[in-house]
Image (cartoon, rainbow, N blue to C red):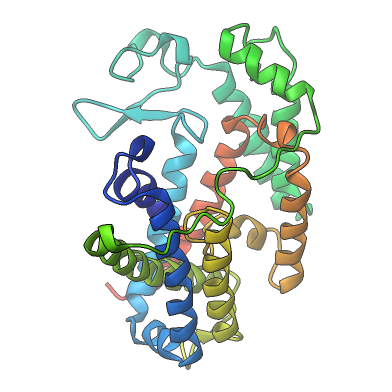
Length: 327
């Protein structure tokens, strides 16, 4: 989420209060993609990837795994087992959201008593691990679906649609099942007149380029190692040049649709853990994303405690590379 946050909160800013207008930021991202493509064609990006010490690349994967695990443990995108604290960076949580204090912490009397957390742990965590022990294909998907189905009915302690204003609104959206709306405000909005934002435009372009090089290189290397596709002699993986070029073109294409830099994401580890190691996996995932455009009400209603344990499991598996770091 690094580049997404940088674009939203630093470059463009909340409600457009940042240093660069949204349209100019999309122009910077569009140009950045072609800069990446040139680096990949000339082989400079692959050279840079090989120049990074092996231990740093391994540590990048371990760090990504730790980050995934942390996300899976929090309230926003996980099971809500931990939260921020005023005395320490994190504190034990697990209380229902309605009982949380103003500072986001949980009172001692309500810790570890959130029903949704326990549904996520047992059905999304223990069950998934049990199925993986017996090499059941789709174990992660089964866990997510089971927790989601349990959480969709209203009037239960673990519902994703409580009888509140927000819950009612989300449930009305969920009942649509199929919904689609055209791209109106973000399609092809690039502004090429940057005379009033030259310095900030250059800063955003350089930052996007620098961060995306490290982000994509670290992620691709970590995923390739996770899939056991790294050549130990060259410290590279087959098709790396094409992978970098596709990543670069995706950045420019994504900017036309109004998105932050498109790159390889750490969630790919979930597919790799299920045995996906070829382009067919990526094509299938892309097709499923296309379908999700029309079934947005269903996919948007998958609760965070359904996917939290998956993030924890994938993050834990990625952290196994810590034993190979030359300390």
